[in-house]
Image (cartoon, rainbow, N blue to C red; front, top):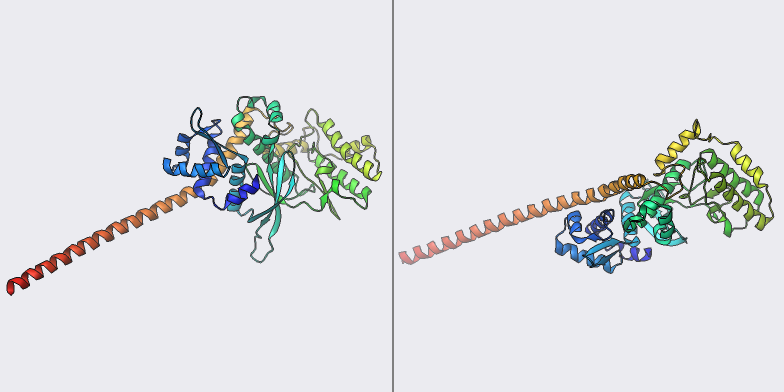
Length: 398
């Protein structure tokens, strides 16, 4: 688990991260990445690569096979390490704390982000690590037929796609809809501000009428932007003294989705049922649904609604109006490839610059040492020769 990642994180250096990125690269093409390909990706000698691979296997960041050849796969722990390393480099986080939430498809940790100004206070944030591919692979495979023969990297893609979609839609909704502020995203992880208050399911509110109205208002705002949460319940709504916040967005759909009405009705029913069972607060479902749709800026794919849908499609890294995981094979290659290349360049560019400087420095020191040794050797030989000639001269004169 991620606690193990945190335990070994400080022991990892840039060459270890380069190996992890190399395995990540290879898993786009291989079920088990051949060790020969890792030599090409990492530019490390076979001896150094073998030593570091053994350490990564021992720390459960990668797994190895010897049949039918020596090959490697990255595990979620290794993927966690890559995302954390990127966040630290970008200064999106400076420290990570305890686990504060866990579900079937994600795990959440508290963290700290340093303030932009030196005089500011550290900013509390959370990191959400998506785990879709690990816990629900059969479901992922069932809804994505194009992954049937590509199991070797579908878990990476499933988790990464979920994080891409969620971060993209959060950027579209914030700040008009009350959600935590999105801060950064890499691979399968998102950094965002802490949600305000506590989960609705664990909280007894003093004014249920007001909170129910506020939640339905946020649902209406979201719908007006051409978005339906599609997984809303008391388990992903936070309530505070003066506001509510909606979380967990990777399953969103748009009103053009073939099951949009059913999903919106399910979202609203979940909320109404919770308030009725816990507080006796009753609303008519049909009236609420009509109200949500009545003030909508979404116009079924024309006018402003079309603009919103296009925006979601661009920022959410997947086609608007499709259920998560129903993207085509072309979508998969484009989204995964573009995002991966960006991570690859970001991780490797800095490492190769450092390696180049290190090689130049080593070569310079070696040249200095060679020149110095040669000068010392010449001086020594000259001194010996002078002493010898002096002794000969003294003996001759005597």
